[in-house]
Image (tube, rainbow, N blue to C red; front, side, top):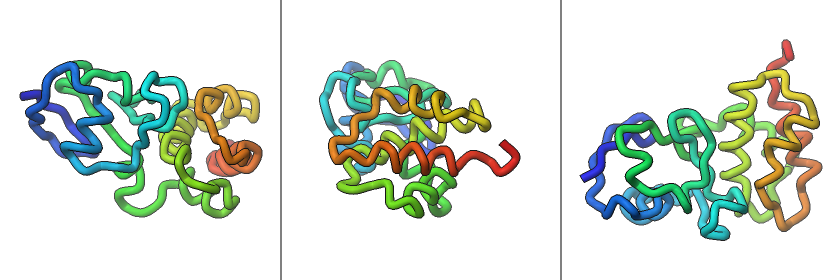
Amino acid sequence: MTALSVNGEWLEVDRPEDTPLLTVLRDALGLVGSRFGCGQGLCGACMVLLDGRPVPSCDTPLWQAADATVVTVEGLGADGPNLVQQRLIEHQAAQCGFCISGIVVRATALLAETPDATADQVAQALERNLCRCGTHQRILEAVLAARPLTA
């Protein structure tokens, strides 16, 4: 059994320790917002926050999340869309939606750490998140619009 906090709730998961965190989230816990993309931690579709850091959950073993805090895209929007999610909607930045959960997680982490992030910092932070629909410009504009008004 592995104990971890997922979206604010402490759980014990009965899966082998080398099971990918993404598999646990989707199959054992029913949290399907994080997507399986490449399976190698390269595309960003499966991003979650692990103790506040964005990590690809497809290549993060369950043992690495033991006694840690995991926040998924569902956790970020538990009380309604967060500011990044709101701005993505307003800018119509999502087309198919496959990549957006990972982008929301990574952008939320960036703006929590660097509220006044520049366009270059946002682009660099989202560099690993692949959007095959080609809405990168709208995504970047939406994330920049999610910065606090004082930034």
